[in-house]
Length: 332
Image (cartoon, rainbow, N blue to C red; front, side, top):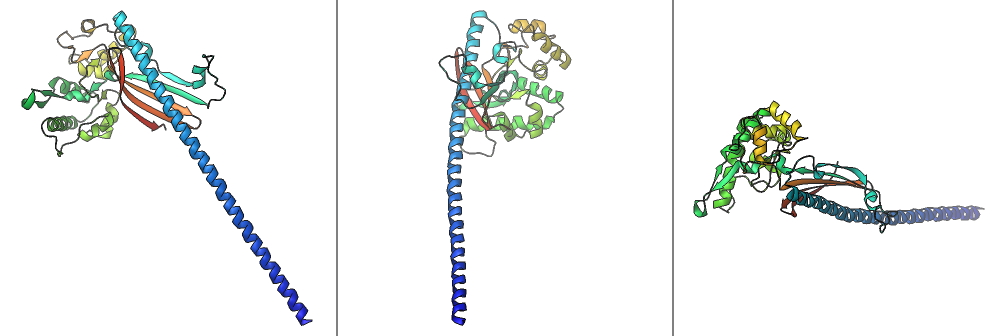
């Protein structure tokens, strides 16, 4: 009997070992299968994201080209009619979010059934509706005598704007000094120096010592453009308008903003006649204008579950339009 019992116990042990081995094999196979499925899912997600990124890039590029076309046609219309740039023109009307297929549905050659749900929105803003911080310092002289100096007229305009917004004047003085030093170094000494770099975007004005809080307060009224630019009297905010005209107070500037919505300034002499205290001597072409060359274009694309935003600076010279810079970010 003992050998028989011993044989049964051995068989039970063997069956238990075989069952455990089978369970281990099943677990291993399930793990490998899960890993393979995860790799396949990950590859699909990466491919989908890359496809959406490429599609978004093409669509955003097309939107920028569309904005450039609008600005070019506006320039052609203004050339023929002699009109000024103002906020009643088609380019100043924002594009509310609309499904992209609605733009293509009018074309019988396009089939929109297979398109991803893409939604487009955006706006064109006159960059010369703001005081240009680049104007604070100008270059004078030629050759070896070339030097940088603060522009008294522009510094006075920024000083008045700082007063209107209750911002620290010491910050403005330091920013002008840093900008003058940086410009001077760029003119005479190409070697690295202790002075800040010249900004290329509005947000980079912090390099000159302007605080983030001040930048936020100045954002609706100040910009940074790569060349000296006049302020467009037809599109400027009341604060920027008030700051740029020494004789103007904020209440009168706000009234002018309301009036110009229906009757824009046609030219500088007409503006001088309507702005109290202003003359053709105070409204000079290098400081003020009723036409603009620089425009900021913002485009937002919602493609499937991803929203991408592109911000561009477009320059218009005659009937030609070009992109100065482009920034693409994931919209919040």
